[in-house]
Length: 112
Length: 111
Image 1 (cartoon, each protein chain N blue to C red):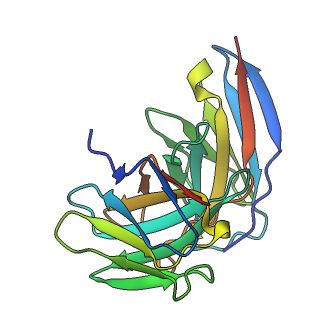
Image 2 (image 1 turned 30 degrees about the vertical axis):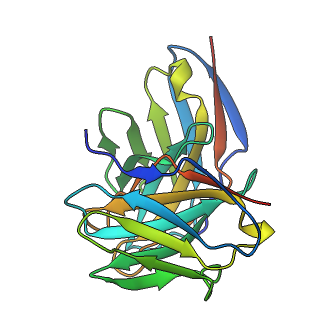
């Protein structure tokens, strides 16, 4: 069964550093998403991406964040200058339509 | 998107049906009911969705009341691996891409 994959599973970085989180969505999907979950809190929507552009973003997704689909298979989330409060699980998801979204296993980002 | 209300936690015995309720009294005509679950710290997993008819798939059944103000997710024979947080989400499919997760119901399946 096809699935969304994410790398790395755990990323440790120092405050102020740039990080890139990588995702490989399900191959024939057209819609891509990033969510995050701070430890013990709710899953929060960050951004959706369709047809090579951002289709929707939340207030969390400020100028420090960017997304890219650099080739036909990868979907990345970049945080330019990480803050302590960026520490969270980051989940990538994809969908073939506006129906069900399929989530990856997540990347745990720890900012020290 | 309409707000949903779910019990904080529930439990059921292994092998028995788990019935998870969700209240969405402000749902509008073009909003769907989605159910996802999250096992420990894994990524959320899609379970089922519906508009007004009852739905069934290999994982679960979704029963939506006639007035659509509430729904119940049924896991017919719960196993220990069904222990998870279950999220009921109401969402329009024609305008917004995002899923808005609440706190969900923490289901504990007892041996």
